[in-house]
Image (cartoon, rainbow, N blue to C red; front, side):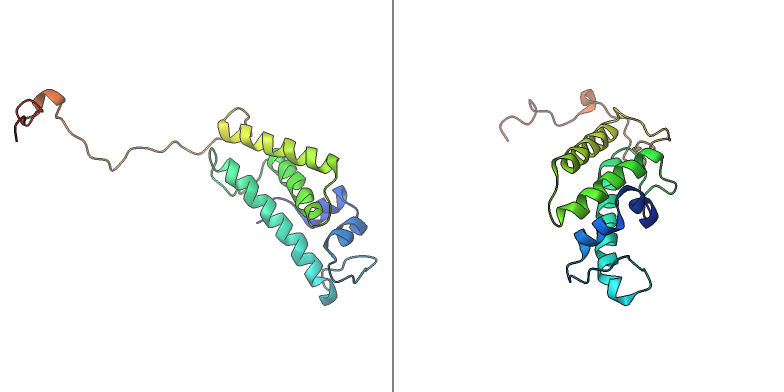
Length: 152
C-alpha cells in the first residue's frame, strides 16, 4: 500500500514534468495512460520512486510507530510526497528548492523518530522484557566470590 496516489502526485507535479523525469526511452507522450503498454516503463519508474519514498518514511517512523501505517496520517502523506518528488527529480537534476523541501522532510522524520514530533496517533507499545529469566538471587548470595577464588 502506497501512502500517496498518482492522482495526488499530479496535483503537485504536472504530468509533462513527470514524463520529462521518467521517460528514459524518449517516447515523449503528451499524456500518460496507465493502460498503454508503451507507458509501462514510465509508470514503473514513478511507482519505484513512490515505493522508495514510503520505505524511507517507514525507516524513520518505525522507531516509534508500527509501520506501514494502515491509515497514514496527513503528515506522513505530506512527507512521503516530498520524498517522492525528490526521488523523481533525482533521476535528472534536483533543484535547490526540491533539495530544501526534501531536507525539511527528512528533518521532520528524524524528529518523529526521536519523539520530538507527534503524528497524533498512538506509538507502538514499548518492548517488554517478557520471556526473560527471573531470579531471586542477589550479589550477597554468591558462593564463588573473587576473594574465595583467589589463587585458583
